[in-house]
Length: 102
Image (cartoon, rainbow, N blue to C red; front, side):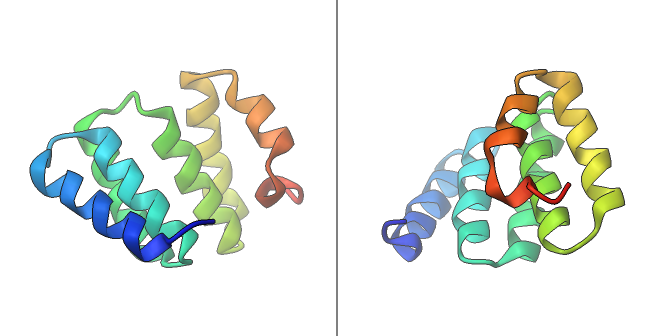
């Protein structure tokens, strides 16, 4: 998985330099999620959506966090939106271990 604290540090720098960058917030969310810091990651994914509502990756990752927190109803809402924005998300769901039970 690499050095997650270093990845987080780099992502925080990117958010600091580009605070209105949806992808920067997603990168920070990813670094936090991989460290199982789900509440903090969720904040970053929501900020990414605040900046750009068409960000299917943010909806997908919010769905992942909901699954990891055993909230299937919330997960389905986020995942439906991700699929609506990008139908290719269906393939990603089928391949991703976190979604085997959904």
